[in-house]
Image (cartoon, rainbow, N blue to C red; front, side, top):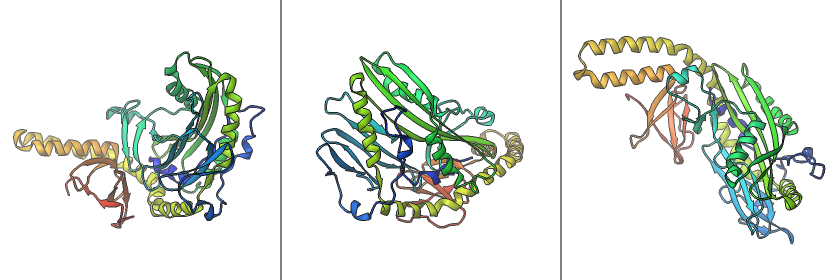
Length: 381
């Protein structure tokens, strides 16, 4: 299994609906805007739009723009993990610090559900796993509602007296995400895709209230399970100002636009890695099937090494045990030009490292982007 099955869905920025409220704009009105003329993205930086809002543009790649309240502190942009795994996010805070609105998370990662094999190799809840799309985390699956509750507690619980007021499922965004996955049904053939959304309203600190919505997707099949966060957004404010903040939240959503030039460039990046990504699951399944044969062979080799003397064969024993570990997990050790090692899924013949430290694999010795990636060598080569 591999998180890059999800990378196809990350090539467009997401729009999030506010928690259900009769005064809120209907969720159905929030759709991705990819029909914006390039001319609107020609200039760099921010610009004023009216007396109350200013236009914020992604400062990193110019991927998107959104109207934010004038005078508020703005943070955000597109954080790229690999060529096709990236996190768009925006966070605005009122001048007095009492109100906050956010979309996305710059630290979003993929999650792998630890199975019995992973646990036998030392994996545990919360431990890290290196993948070709960056660093992931071993974690049991959380539904959208569970994720929203956990995220809110972690983000706001330290401010005192955290209490969930309402919690329930979210269905509109779930249907949207399901439609996105359905577009790649051929690549996901044989896998079970389950999407779940949730929304909560909560109280924390002294008279503060907030709302948070999240959608997660679980992918099961090919001998493993992985999941990721597909949607995230929310806001917090003093209880007496919660509706005012909700209105600003909705305005930001309606103003969110994707840069068509950036989108076209991103589609080009995706096409370079799509073939290897869509073939990964079946390769991983075959790798797991061969793992036991590799383990048996490695144990036999280890026994031979030990009988020939520990002192003279220590390096060979270490190498054999590493083969055992890699064969059991279906992974391989690769090294960059500085000798730094990475343990990756053994599903490709060649591996490349980007300037950001990410690792990708190909079946042909063809650098996907010579200006960004450098070749890596396998252990023993």
